[in-house]
Image (cartoon, rainbow, N blue to C red; front, top):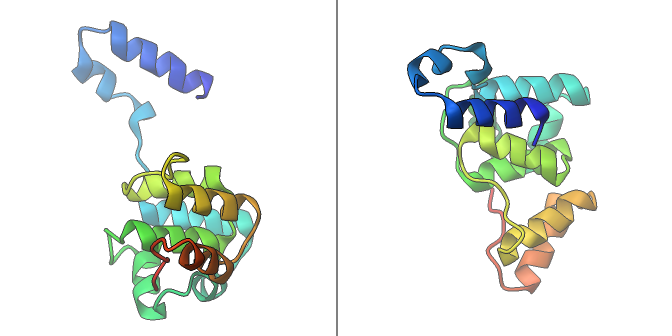
Length: 140
């Protein structure tokens, strides 16, 4: 947890006036679309490349990027994380931006996903591992 987050957490715990605190700019919540645009800029990847690597339906994926699809499923967001070749920390940031729940290491399927992201496995390689372990694969 960053020092800013710890500081904010302490302010929240010790303040009687929540309305005043919530007016602060620290409570900006970037949209999934904003986060995807940021990742494109950071990784210098093209949308088409990310979509191809994610194995998502291209028209649906472009709608996610454009903000026309505001609530993709958790698996679709995870597929995008593989498309960007993110590590598990960055994948969790993407999952938080989509408000679909982060990867949890005590969940067997999530443990496989974390391991695959950290070891730069492709979506296909990850699905093979999931299938072998009789866990739900990431469907496109």
